Amino acid sequence: MPKKDSLLIGAHMSTSGGLHNAIQHGINTGCTTIQIFTKNNNRWEQRPTTDEEAEKFLDAQEASGIAPVISHTAYLINLATPNQDFHDKSIKALIDEIQRAEQVRIPDVVLHPGSPVDGTPEYGMKKIIESLNICIDKTPNAKARISLELTAGQGSHLGYTFEQIAEMIAGVEDKTRVSVCLDTCHIFAAGYDIRTKAEYDKTMKSFAKIIGMKYLKVIHLNDSIKDLGSRVDRHTHLGDGKIGADAFKFIMQDARFAKIPKLLETPKDEEYEDDKRNLALLRKLAAAPSVK
Image 1: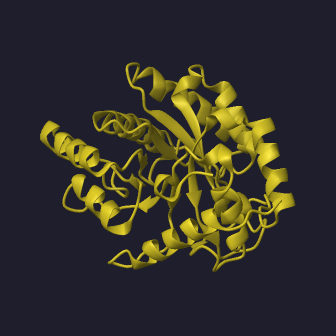
Image 2: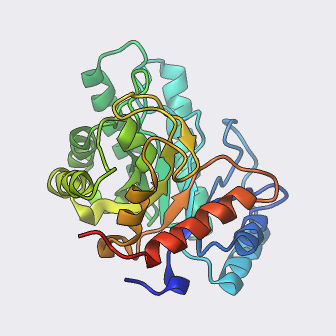
């Protein structure tokens, strides 16, 4: 069990007014790791991050001790889209996200793999794999990994089964440039139960066998408003949804995840009081008697 002050827990933080502001929000909220958007998450184009802005962020991060910082790509990106213009923009945007992450030494860039819209899953999977290889080829000197996020499978979104994520990784030529982000709400909505110790162990054993624990670099901790297998992505506060608090205790007490950033994407208020409450619960769960 890690010591309380060494727990790698945090939340998604706002970069409004400058990337460096996210670090201060993280300090104020009691985070030891944070997630950010390195650009506006609902726009294709945005001016580059200046060297001065990057240096200001890195100085603030170093002084804070908050590490790692993870980034999440803009929601517009869809590597599986059959729309050529949309796909071209998605490729350009993901390359930009990787370059922005590289500029501020972010190790993992979390990505929703994409949806073929009205196309077949087979078409979508092929398109995603091709797109990942293009983006990696176009950023040959980057160290930042594209972290494939397990999805809820809402609509025609791909990446909701361990097998789909494993197939994407298998198709990537340079596997050092990909990782996986496990979102508790998403996997639960996709049908993977983690509510009891037996079901949690079964799910994690399946993940390890099909994908491999070595690829797991980011965990999103979110409860789910919707039921197991609903394929609907709706986050809520830890312990307030259909998953319940026990699952988060299993994760916090799982030694395999001690060095993996565990990040909240739960609803927010302006003062981050909800995040503080969720983080306090995680610290309490980490210290609670374990379930065998």
